[in-house]
Length: 109
Image (cartoon, rainbow, N blue to C red):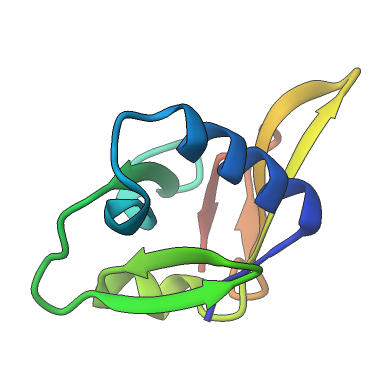
C-alpha cells in the first residue's frame, strides 16, 4: 500500500480539480521505471483507464493505482509534497530503497 501525507493530498486534489476528467474517472498512477542515476526512477501521472493487473489503494480520498512490478518496489511508501524554499514537488519516502540519489527522484533496492 502507498500512503499520502495531507500536503500531498491537497496538491493532488488541486491538480485533479483542474483536469478535464470527470470525478469518477480520475486516479493517480504511481510507477517505477528503469533509469535515473540510481537505477530506478519514480513516475506519477493522472489516468482514467485501468490496466490489467493494476492494484488499487485509497488514502485520504485519493485513488492510487500501481502495476504489480511497481507495487513490489513501492509497498509501504509514503508520498509527500513540498512547496518550500528548497523546491516544489512530490517526494517519496520508500522503506524499500537501499540507496537514493541526491535529487530524490531515483533509487535502488
